[in-house]
Length: 471
Image 1 (tube, rainbow, N blue to C red):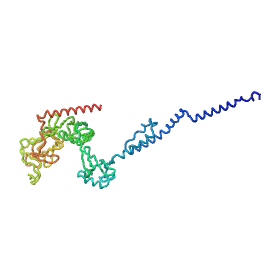
Image 2 (image 1 turned 90 degrees about the vertical axis):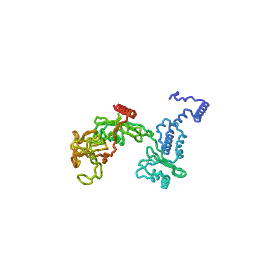
Image 3 (image 1 turned 30 degrees about the horizontal axis):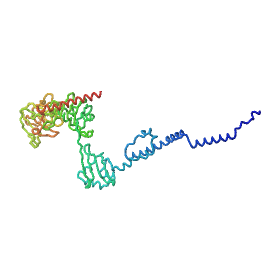
Image 4 (image 1 turned 135 degrees about the horizontal axis):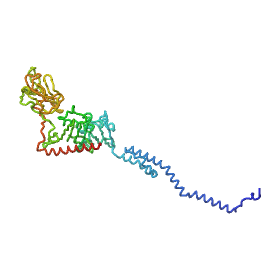
């Protein structure tokens, strides 16, 4: 080792070292007592990031409790993510407020009628004793309507703080509600019937299966489908004549309450195309208040029946339930009228219809039976023979010759035995007031056309719009 390398570092004066140590101590104390603002801000930010999820969880739990108490839907928790740093303890504590508000509301209960329910079981479900049922039913004669329950019907109960019934309410139909309200003397019954708004509705349908299925698919109710069949029943045999591709348009009255259809009125106008032939119908009420259906040009949809199907004939035997049969020599009902005429005299169809039978039928001999629409049926017996083209399944027109007077079957002389049935029941043809096919009178024709033409035009427009929307 040289002398230079072993030389000690220069020493500072002792006073200098003492001063430096004092300054360092003062600086350390200052840092402990007075931390910088940057450090404090960073700590605050970290504190919010750690505490925010806890406060959010507390708020979510409080909100869930409030939802359970009020039965109101909860807001999506995602809606609060961006504001999580702003949640305060005061906000979290304020969340349960709706619970206190709910406690102040009236005690409301609702029950839905299910299979096997009675008024007593429904009262029991809301905590009311059987004595309350008797009290309610005895309060008013009309209150018994609450015991006429329907499956799915809703009953609403209002109870006072003591748990006693103060109000009972139920909607019995789309148009009618009933209510019982407690008063000093017992309960008061009240019925409210809504008055529907009447508007017209349109449907169009194409038959690709049965009429009922196609009509239902188009939106036509069963009752309106039957009404349509009745309107066109004289022209169309809905049991046998319907073919795939037949179509119909119907405008009908619809009853509406609060925007909801609650019932239907009559058909206002209709059009039916069967086998390429189109029939029209318009409902018209005349000045006397009588309503009927007519074709678009004013002819009656109801077909008249010829009163006498044989010209220049005389009545040899009338309708009787206790006539003595001239051949069988015993009392036997005579369910028709006999028209005596020379052999070979033409017999005419009483109205338009379809031939159900053209052939032999026991004691009636050669017989023709015609179905007129859905309601009427006529029978012609003891014929000598049938007119050309008249056979089972053929269609005939009113006044068309269908056969000739004869004496086949149980007959003592040439005559026509004529029967008239309404819905399968024999009636006296001479006394039956059948619908006469009177057209619209001249005095009301302009009024009729003012209704008919817009209805026909609307069906054309509605159909065109519907078909265009499907393209």
